[in-house]
Length: 203
Image 1: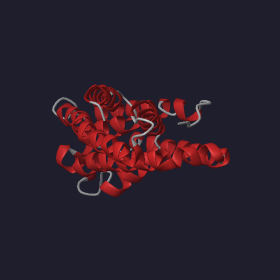
Image 2: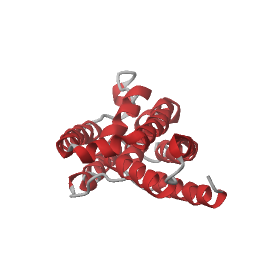
Image 3: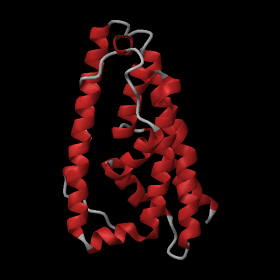
Image 4: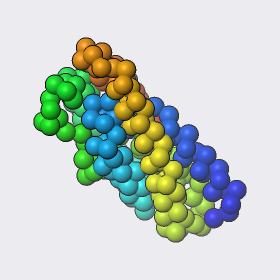
């Protein structure tokens, strides 16, 4: 791949990874409620899980959804239901000091699997493959794109977890933490818009 194309892609990966979305909203809430260290598996689950998703779409999964629209519709419904459930879990989460060790953040595998029902992840992955993989690039180009996404994505997501952890110094009152969690849950619900819109995958 040409250097200018790779640099353009890195800029794309950074902007799409750092802007608000379901992953960053959940990691922000995790940083506040569980601390940065306990959120690290969540961060790596997002980064690696998304890269695997990019590989899958580059290998032809996006074309499969085009051939079978009902499968994509089912994925959207499942994704919407799961995001609503996650929003409820965040909204009703109790502050760490109220729950002791019973409160658990997302683990690596759960965060990786979440990418497949994350609407922003689908848009990011399809956009990357469509815009930055040359027609004659093959799976080597797809692999480079997926690897670069992991390299760029992990630190940008970690920034949100660090910000959430920093907020713990100020949000010491359990009431404020609950308000914050409800606000994060509302943002997660708002992130459903791309999933429920008429956008369909295409390469």
